[in-house]
Length: 194
Image 1 (cartoon, rainbow, N blue to C red):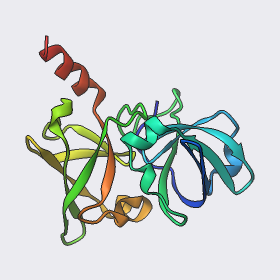
Image 2 (image 1 turned 90 degrees about the vertical axis):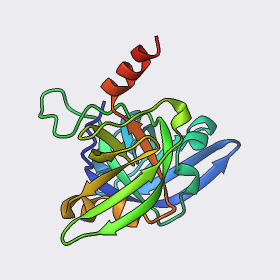
Image 3 (image 1 turned 45 degrees about the vertical axis):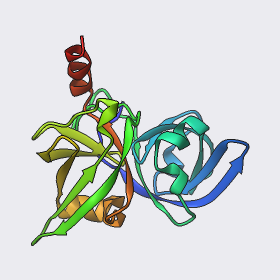
């Protein structure tokens, strides 16, 4: 489990395609603290560390992950939001995040205000996922609050700290992002179908 509070940004330094899998090597400030077999959220995707050194770690994205997330668009130099799994003896600063991306969305609007930003996203609603006003949403692994929930999309407001310390600053109109919808909302939506 994760909280959606991004710990650091990592930079992709190598991509290696092996059959249907993509090995991703990321340079980051937390690499020396990681261990093999540890779960780390990468843009909100829980992946297992398979190799590391003091400055970088490697994870593998399989075909299933590549088809349902924005990892297939990575390039050397891309920035990735990183979060290690939460500690059960600490505060839950964001919200409960599983690290299982539900689907992707497209940025349809990016508005800079005086000291903040409003991003709007549209997603395929046929998958049954919903947002609610003032509810939680995870965008590229970042725990955010929905400020405008609509049938086909939603908006979030970004504070300067989040803008500077995550890869949201690189999201432009047309960019694809990973979404994980609020776990409680997913269970309620499933119950309503019965």
